[in-house]
Image (cartoon, rainbow over all chains, first blue to last red; front, side, top):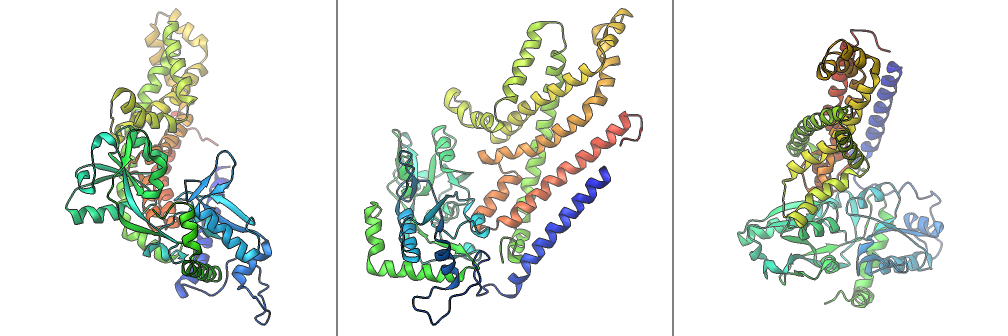
Length: 289
Length: 226
C-alpha cells in the first residue's frame, strides 16, 4: 500500500514537472508569439472579408460573450449592487461598451469577481478574456500580461482616524500604514517617504475590509490605497488626508499570448480617449473631481 | 510563457532570502505552537478522564469551542477584537502561537482522550485494586499503552498545525505563505512563488511524518507495520 502510494506520488510529481517544462520552452525562444490564446478556435477569418476581426477577437464574437474580470467591492469602479445584483461602475460600463463593439450587444458580458490576487491566474487560465479591475500598470506586470494605455489615473491616498489629526503625508512620520498585498501602494509610499525623509512602516493585508478592520482596532494608523477605493471606506470617525500623490495608471490587462485582443483593446482605449467617450463615462461616475 | 516562465523563476531565485526568512518564521511558530498545543492537549485530555465533573466540563467546553469555530475567526478576533474590546494589543507572533496552539490543543485533547479511552477500563480498576494510586495507574499502566494509539493521530495534528500556521499571513505575519502572497502580488509571478511555498512547507512536514513513522515502529516494539 505504502509502496503504491509513493509510486503514485512520484508519478504525479514527474508529470507536473514535465508540464511545467513544456510550458516554459516557448518562453525562452519568443516572448510574444503572434498566436492567439488557446481558447480561440483556429478558424481564422479570411483577410478579404469586410469588417474582419483578428482571430483573438473573433473568438469572443463567435462565443457571443465577453468574459471580464472586475472588482465587486470598489464603488464607482467595479461594484455589485447588493439590491439589484447588477454590476456597476466605470469599469463595468467599459466592459459593456467593449462587448457592444465586438459582439454588438452591451449585455453580452460575463462578469467574474476578482481580487488583486486572483486577477493574474484567471487570465492565465483562460477563464476571462480581460481584466478591468483597477489593475495598475507596472513594468514587472507587463512581462506577464498585456496592458492597454491607461483608461484612468488615480492618486494614492490615506484614510486615517480623525483623532490622529494628520493633514499631510509628512504627519505620518513614524506611523504604521496598512496596505493591500498585490497592490503597488507600498513601493510608491516607500519612495515618497524617502523623498520626504520620513519613516513609515507597513503591514500588508489580503483585502481592503481587513485593512479597514486593522485601522479601527488601532493595528495601523493609516489605510492606504488608491483614493477612489478609499472613498468606499470612510466612516464616522475616519477621514482621508488631503494630500495625495503618485497617480496610479489603470489599464485593461489581457493574457500575454492574446496579442490580437490586446491590440484591439489598445485601439479601442486610445480611440475613446481621443473622442471623449471615455471622459464622458468618467464624469458620469463622478470620478473626474 | 505563462505562469511558470523561466524569468519568473530567476526573479524567485534572486529573492530567495526573503522566502527563507518566511521559512524560519513558520518554523518558529510551528515549534512554539506545537509545544503549547501538546501541553494543553495533555492537560485537558487528562481532565476528561478525572472523576471530578466540573473538570470534565471545562475540558468539554474548551474542545467544543475551539473545534467548532474557524481558526481564521479566532485569529482575527485575537488580532482586531482584543484591541477594540480590551485595549490589549498582542504581537502577531504571539497571536500566531496562541491562536494555533489553542486551536490544535483542542484536537490533541481529543487524541489524548481517545488514547486513554482505548485502554480497557478493567486495567484501571485492576491497578486500583492492587493498591496503586490513580496517578500511578495513569502514568505507569494506562499512558504507556495509550501513547501507541495516540502517535499516528498526533502526527496528523502536528502536520496540520504546521500548515495552519499559514493563518498568520492574514494578519500580516511574514511567514512562508505571506511571503509568497506578498512577493507574487507585487510582480504577479505567482507560479514559482507558490511552488516554492509548497516545497518549503513540505520540507518541514515530511521529516516530521517520517519521524512519527519511526517512533510508531519503535513503540510497536519494532513490529513490522503494514
